[in-house]
Amino acid sequence: MTLRQTAEKVVRRLQEAGYSTFWVGGCVRDLLLGRDPADYDIATAAKPEQVEALFPQTIPVGRQFGVVVVLEDNYQIQVATFRAESDYEDGRHPKFVAFANAKADAERRDFTVNGLFFDPVRQELHDWVGGQQDLAAGVVRTIGSPAERFAEDHLRMLRAVRFATQLDFALAPVTMNSVKALAPRIRGISAERIREELMKLFKPPHARRGLELFRESGLMAEILPGLAATLECHQSPDYHPEGSVYNHIGLMLEHMKEDASPSLPWAVLLHDIAKPVTASCDPETGSIHFYGHERVGAEMAEQILERLKFPRKDIEEISLAVRCHMQFKDAPQMRKATLRRLLMRPTFPLELELHRLDCVGSHGRLDIYDFLVAQQQELASKPEILPPLLKGGDLLALGMKPGPALGQWLEQIRDKQLQEELRTPEQALAWVKQQIAAGSLPAGDPEIPSQ
Image (cartoon, rainbow, N blue to C red; front, side):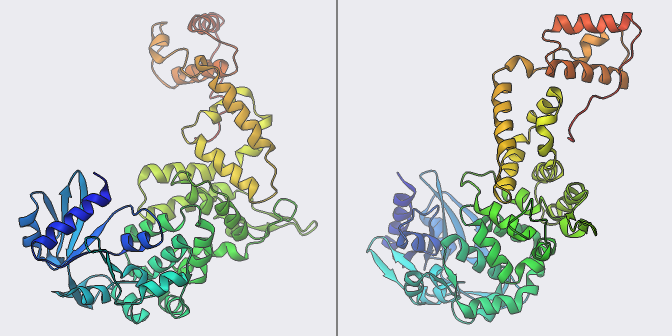
């Protein structure tokens, strides 16, 4: 049974029990736009205890607000009792919630295109808020006064920008003007909620438009002021004919592939985040430089991502991509071992795609990208290179002592393996014995790209 069939079955069971019930919100909007909804939300006259009595498996996720999740056919369907809300004291939570009828429930929602109700049993659409008209016109507009809707939940400002981006709709002028006026209030919203909206806002294929609306709304200056600073950060035209760092970032977002890693938009947004604070101009040539921007940028990126409560794994891989993105220009001149260490980094796929976008969004030359792809394919054709020839136990068996020197020996052996100077464990052991016999000491860590 499909998700849609199950969602219809839930509506039918509630209606047969005598409760007025509809599909609501985004699923109705998407169906009218000819899109396949990712989920189905249901609004009903049934109280939570009545919903629970009709369905054997439920989860009381927000029972005090009339919200119950119904588990049916291995799907989760959110079922909410019609309600009205009032007195939002903290910009998010209503002080009073009262069960109501369908029309009142529609009028409490955020945007007209999300306020449509559909009865899948009778095939009837109910529109009490003008959602059909705005859907046909391609407009995101608040239900009622935008100032009131945004005062109820400040995150709705960012959601307005996100919906306009994802749907490729315009923001109604009165709605946009209200966002601009109230933008500073977004600071009162939790970092986790903001992060989730931004993840959706910068998802391809509409990421560049998301950036533009984010800026125009005034929300960028409140949430990511470091990104807003890139607007007036100019670059040397020989490498960056596109102009400012902001334009560069926009072009990169525009060329992201739809199956991009969720970390990629953030690597793009933050890879040059430190250019405004590291910019300098050569007084003789007029050239603009950003010395050390990748190092400073990695620190700034980590701080921003931590503030937005990103998972530690995501913070580390995005920050690494920011710190290392300037290494790629030197790839053709790297020793084979150094290059292969770069290719074998767990984050290399993210870094490689960031490099491609960096080129496409500026000078347009992809010679280094093509070189790296070829080197990646060559490395993949030599699986024997991937596992180290020797481990610490092999050297301990030769009488070496645990400690830093042991690690240095292993690094030198690994370096020679990646250079293809040593190809088998036997060759590696013979080389180590030869060095010991000659009284040689490891020369220190070989050249390794930042990890």
